[in-house]
Image (cartoon, rainbow, N blue to C red):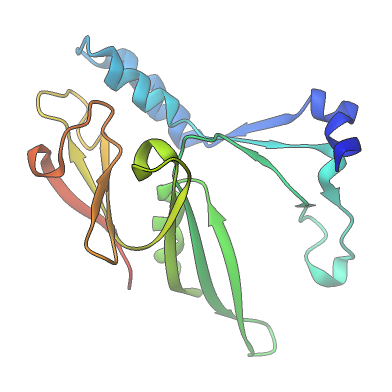
Length: 192
């Protein structure tokens, strides 16, 4: 592992950004607000996935499609929440298959829930320290996600509210606005 980290391919990782988040961050230029903390918060949520040549796995085609690529590890932006899910679907033989999927964006989670070819069995949110109110990362069962707006903000739906199975509500408000003070709260995803 230490050798892999010193590998020259790590010095030049490949970065990918989810297009919708880049577009969302670019729309900040159109915002009339001078609240730069809100603008930075939206830009910092732009998700980058970094892959390393040394981490790419050689998986025989029998275990996946020839166009699929597999990595032993990837780099993720460390301050974003992630979504660990278990999905269930039927394979070509009619058997039921369960697979764990890590989504890096809530929009991906929402889209997967709308996919009629698979069923979302469970969902957890991995909360970074800045959201978990703890010294380290935290994983909790997720029941619902709401979008909300900071009072006086020009970015409607710019705040995410995570409703956990234990009833706790956690927000990604960049200015620490409590859930009860957020406006225009709309449920955008809930566990089926």
